[in-house]
Image (cartoon, rainbow, N blue to C red; front, top):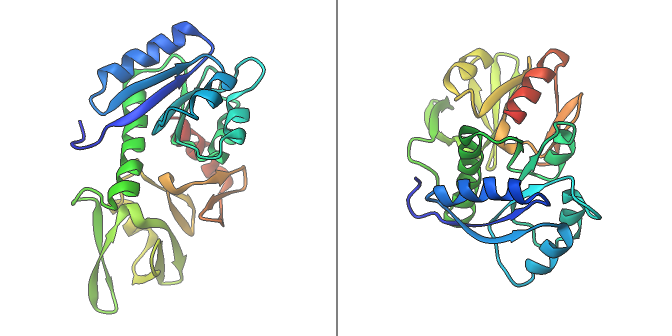
Length: 234
């Protein structure tokens, strides 16, 4: 349980059995509150005009309008966790800035992990804060600087130096890429190229050749592609 966070949720799925399974997980989670259930995209679009939600568990394949069609029509988009029986939509799903992509049948561990991502982003947006231990120290210009991991977008090699690209000013450090791989949490950061380590949570778009973070394209090594796909679908 994360103290002080309660996300209002909606479940959108044309299968009543699938909705029931997700509803049970929501009701069992202390940081979630179910406020709406919808069985199609049209009903959802109309319902969201009157009901505010923080997070939607959204099926993709539905009659008439798909989950993607629904998002294209929404002006104000809540956080989205896609729920689907197929993996073929994973590329497209992350182009919609999805928090996560859950494949049916959903396990409790995967559900909990996806919800944690949503809670973390909600805290950042509403409180502008993260856990006190969510940082590393780096030495730059003979001074030690505290770098919040949630603000670190990616790291790139610059000869004998590395550059930490954050949501603030970049930081240049005399260090190796290998040393950062060793100290960064592997569930959140990944080396996708010999010259780049990226914050997985910051990925906005990706394809077989590069990923995009805050509008910047970063090369993806061919032999790292399968590793990245595995992490994003885990």
